[in-house]
Image (cartoon, rainbow, N blue to C red; front, top):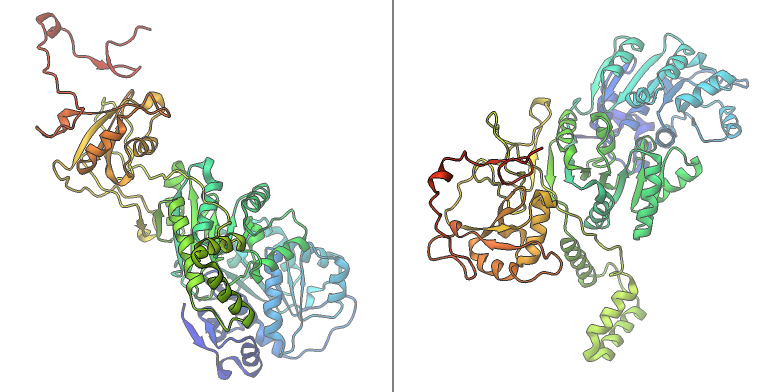
Length: 630
């Protein structure tokens, strides 16, 4: 994100002092664009979420606030500017930002939002604030009650106008604008400008000046976008594993419904995470308390709905997790924009069911973001990473001086433990809780189906074709598949998951086995891989192409591991006694058939009567033979 030096010449003495007191020495692109623009005109500002739009809103109002006017009197507040936001949290955030920005002008700021006491708001309005930040519904209430008089408003700012229209506030916005003078300035600020917002802007603005802090539709380069294929029944387990894989990351988890927020809050708390939740059904005091704890770092996970999360301006959110696919590209843009803020890096990850993968690619394509398809981290990888962090933490240089008592106790412990030092350290680790956090869960690793080749008219499939962890496909010739796939959107079109590139297959590098388990028994490639890895004592990377038939399947195993696989896979197995494995000699080179492989029997020449019969055809019940009578 381009930054510009915050200088007294550009900001003026009052604003420069406010920036300096806040510790800011630079301006973001959108803030610089507003400062350099003609702020006597209506502004239409677009910029990525987290790019400093809130301060840009304040900068757009500075010229009118620097012009003195007589202080109004009376029971009704007569503000000079209205800033309208879609949610309470965003309203409070805007209020906080504008207060430090306008402190030296001086210009007072008050927020009126839902969930607050009318009595407290009336008391604040009686002080005649120059700027009122409000949610649409509460502002309409005050206008109708007479506690706010909009007849002296010189500027109206609609912040996140797209979300306000999505939430059904169009009528409230029309009511508010109808009570303000026609000569007012009207500024619109948003990360996206869909058609309905364009129509609203064209209707309420006059000769607007378009400003782009970041070009409309350009993805935030500081955010990595990731899809994880997950069985819908294992979403919670997948969430737990991703939180553990990103240990220490401040994480915002999105789910669609208030009920979903409550369920996740309870489930993650039971799993041992420090978590809080915010949703529309919570009292404002509870929402504020949860958000403040998240901002201070007392909690590392916050679960929220789309609406409740608007206004979450936490610079250190490094991971956004979407439990379900968002409803539209703009919703995804706003969700993911909670991370990667102010030039910091972040990750936006979506849990996607296999049947949703195509729609996910289309949605992220319309959002104009490149993304990757990654496999879920395994429990073993998560544990290894955790252990490495613990070792690094305990063996690194201590920050600052350790007190004398701690140092002396450590010396005595080492001297007294002697040969029992390892046991003593293990006890300390256990009692400290470093090794007693939430445990990773078993989650099945899913991979996408490849693009299916066109089938001749009348042809019937012989089985399901799916990729397997070994990276080979048994359709249309051997193929390879990269588990991580970069998918930049071509020209704004929805990206398609490309078919895996063809790769020449080395002859003789795989041996083929038959498995007595097919589709009629519930077999699929993923479950076959799990069983065969266990039975044959091999890894998924050593398994090649799999073809699942109606009553049996075939699987390829790397030739240098075939003997080992056969020796283990043919042993009696109490867990899966009906799943039997045998080699297919036709797929072994002469003289290389393993021990235990039955010799291939010569085919019996058919008799004249048998030769006259029509060839056998696959029938509906599976297998070959004459069709069953109905």
